[in-house]
Length: 452
Ligand SMILES: Cc1ncc(COP(=O)(O)O)c(C=O)c1O
Image 1 (cartoon, rainbow, N blue to C red):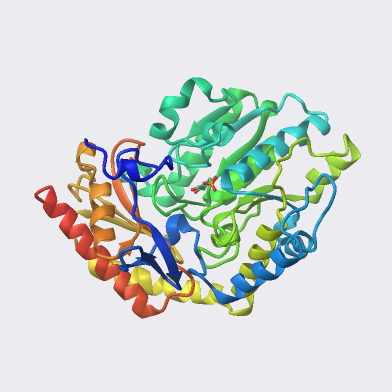
Image 2 (spheres, protein in one colour):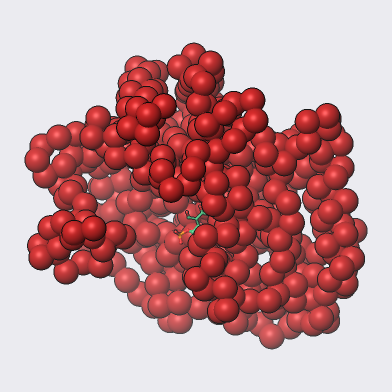
């Protein structure tokens, strides 16, 4: 394929054959292109922009922080912004999470989670624990540790020789594809729990440090919630074997599903949690690893330091932006709004796609929902991956003024297409209607382009 506009940009873009249009502004739920066209940001990029764009309170908080202090290295200093944000997040010790380690994004948060789990066991006198069990069709980030944890086949494939052998993968709690036809939901949960337990046994239960999972699977499978009781079963298995539970809420957390933490709706809490995207809402690059007194106290009484670090830990400007994002969410009761708008989104998606012959599943929670496209609803047969249906939908949607997040490889890393929606929490019901209408047109036009 010929390179388009290649001479114009020296940025190594995601596609090396095309330069994307320039975004020159933002306003609430809208992004503005250089040619003046507006794009409704229905996925907040990748579930990032929870307050939309150019929110005046966040801009003001950032300007204030920048005018005082933009950066101070954490080897020498802490900052007011980091301390206040930590108090805001874990001052009340939600689910026993009492400390926070601020990093620059989701992958770094996962790296920190993996490392603190490992270091905790070394210092707790259990150095044999170095295995991590994760799930197929998961995504935990693109750095090598996070990629080792992730179970997404195509993302792992080129780097397979570089990935750690300490990670193994079990079946995801993905009912649409993994639950057998005559299996009840509770039997499905029991089967997944038995498989996880068997994986502990295979590895040697006293060698497993942690199980890692996304409470609601995001990018790789499209807003997949677990069946009732799954996370309670997983928590019990971890407890039984003395392993930790790491929850990756990089995408599904910070209010996206209607509660600040997605695990609140599962009746359990993790030992370690990764957050990012909605933490700073895209105003600054920031992620965080949250953990418990038990883990921190063990290390404090042992070596006395978490043996990890980056230059931009707890960046003051990033912390100030995230603090204001979290204050806005709290003060404006946006979690209630996410719940209400989530119901509206589900209703509208069901009206538009519920009997669509190529939409096999509509799923998700809160403002984190997806549709999965299939060639045949009865058999759940996916479209031929070479048709790249998800890319066609993305292009048609963008052309029609809608930003959404379609991906392929939904069921097994190769087959399947879905579209993920993660609209800003500040949407109105009318905005949701417009999102669904534009998505409907994009899906139909993409299907038409492959003669369906
Ligand atoms: C669940 C999950 N974990 C980790 C990451 C990695 O985050 P980042 O891209 O900020 O490194 C992502 C990114 O999409 C994610 O969705």
